[in-house]
Image (cartoon, rainbow, N blue to C red; front, top):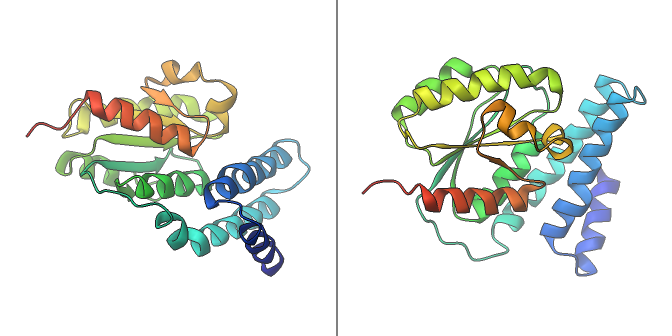
Length: 204
């Protein structure tokens, strides 16, 4: 952990922006850990520990990242949740960092809290819901969750975005699960969310 933190601090000292470190170092490292797991080169425990360490690094960088650009709070809200069965939420955490820096109010729910999520959607207004999935086995469950989200949401024009390695490899799955958009990385996810939210502004 100390070695990784020192390496990142050295990168920052050399002038690398935190956004670059997030998108070009930490995110690809997380994907590589996932690849190792799928290829049986690392077991679940090794991958989980690796992702936990990456998340600890993100926590350490969080304050600096969210304040390295002047942001204006615009009142838009996003709810970020994993699909049932998804154990790793590092990607959602990173996406949440980008949303916060862009001025969004970010809400998150832990895995397995589907009933609670629907209750929140009935009482709170969200412009966007973001879901993450890493494997094809999650597709059917994700489609069901998205259907429930649209029925439960107080915002009947809510935008649903999906992300994770599965949608990077197969962007056509966005339509399969009934979502509105995906993003190849956290930066693109923000761009897509801003575009969709602008078309579906909350009524005054």
